[in-house]
Image (cartoon, rainbow, N blue to C red; front, side, top):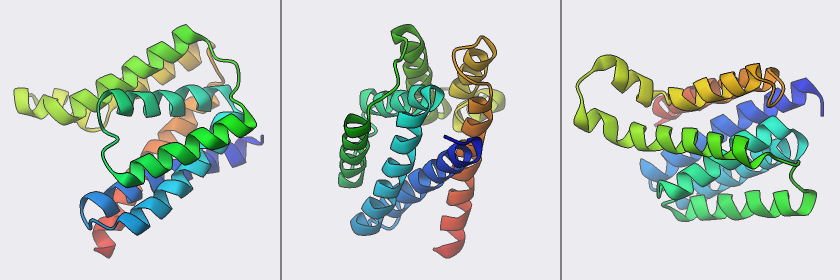
Amino acid sequence: MSYIILAILFFLSGFFMKYSDDLFDVNHNVLFASVFGILCAFASAIATVSDVGAAYIFIAILIGNLIALKVDGIHHIITLIVFVVVCLIFGVPDLSLIVLLICIIAALSDEIGHETISKVTDNGFINLFFEYRFVMKIVIFLLAIFGAFNVLVFIYFILFEVAYEIAGIVFEKLN
């Protein structure tokens, strides 16, 4: 798959993920949250089946969110089903269980920290660190540097994160 298409898929995944969550959490709009969730599932699943780095990231985010009990709406269930079906149909690249576990732990740490850290500390740095989920960013960077996957995947992941933030801004402006 071309690098440009993979970058676009990461961007769309981040944007659709956040927009789906905001539609559900803020507007309680199950229909449109599900539509954007399906778009997220397709974008992230196509990236997953096409690139080993994307597979580590998106599978880890999915499992980390499942373990953290963040799959908490019908839109998440629909998104999960679409993602899994696409991955089963097209196949996931061979993954190292160790690298996948490292990514899952990073994703889980980010989710737990994001939800709880501000309740236990007033430290601005620590709160900011978990507000913007830096554990996964650091882990993905280190894994890319050490050759677990293409270094460009780290840049794509940052693009995913930027798109996630842009979606939040767009949602606020439109609502």
